[in-house]
Length: 326
Image 1 (cartoon, helix red, strand yellow):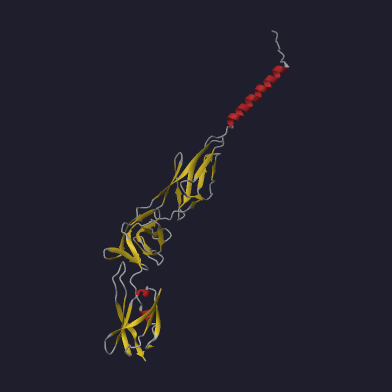
Image 2: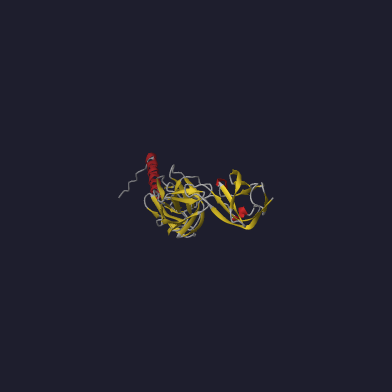
């Protein structure tokens, strides 16, 4: 039997080569196709104690349950694991704001992308507080004296002056003024009404962590009644001459005092000194020329009524008797 050989033409040869190349490159393209995956697989941060906190991940949110009682940071540094051959921005290990507007974008190898937002859930119980003391009442008006404290008791107070703050809310214009916290525990705090608080009617607001309470009770702010302290009285000379003037300096609005008297030891009678001049924090007195000479042991002074206190007088005993001489 005769064998028949068919000769390939040049064009057939090149066509064969082209088919082989297409088959090879087609197989390579299928084997090495770019990955389409753009997922966050794990998102972990550290709490205030350095312990890991893992986010709950869904299609678009990274929900973080922050531990109760811990200060909530402004920034976090997450460790992020994403799909194979994908990238994430901001990158793993980069510090970002711990806010619900912070956005992470994962880009797959093939260029597709997916975005995730932080969602904070703070495990902090409700703040339950009431004013326990520090507010006085005069003529049905509640008030707090400048320099004194408002005391609050309750539950779930974060016992840190960095995490818990106190404010006075002005009822007229709803502005807020922060006041200092003198002491704090998980069940109580004490806030100081300082000298810089303007006159007005206020409510107390307490912010602890993410919780805040504005207490319903309203109160005025007062300087308190005018008063001269024993230390301020001790500056009076022990011997005064008839007609002599002397100055008492005081911090408790002594310029409002409108009468000052001293008691003669022998006669037990009270005699008024002359009020020559008053300035803020200062009272200038003069010994009358006709005042009986001798020793004086008691003092008494008057002041007018204010919004939150009745008119004086107040009285007391000199630490050392005052001698009036010619």
